[in-house]
Length: 150
Image 1 (cartoon, rainbow, N blue to C red):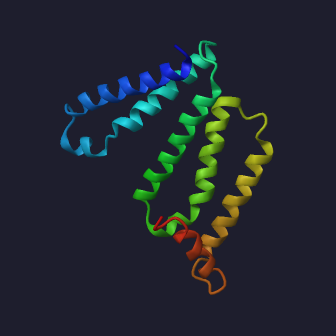
Image 2: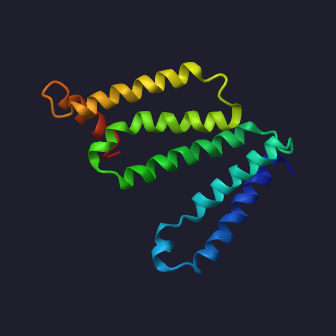
C-alpha cells in the first residue's frame, strides 16, 4: 500500500474513533468538537514526527493536510471574531501558511516572506486604526465583506 492510501485509511480510522469518543464528552464540548478536524490534525502531527524520524517522505500529502488545517483555523477564528477584526483575514491566513511551511522546511528560506507579511500586518493595522476615516472606510469595508456571503 502506498503512503497516501495509508494516510487516508488513518484519517478514516481516527475519524471513526473520535466520533465514538465524542459521545463520552459533556454536551458543551461535543458541540465544539469536530471529529474530522481532529482526525486530520492528529494525522499531520503524526506524519511530521515520522518525517523527522525519516519514516515518512511524502511532503505533498503533508502539505495538503497542513493547508486544510490552516484554512480550518481561519474559519474557526472568523466564527469567533467581531466583524471589525475580519479586516486582518489576509495577514492572519498568510501567517498560518508561513507557520505551516516552516514546519515542513524550517525558517531559513522565509526571510523575504516574513518581511512581506510583517509589512502587510503593519499596513492592515494602519487601515484598522483609520477604519472610520472617510478615505479608508470604503476600502476597509470591501476587505471585510470580501468573503462574507461567499
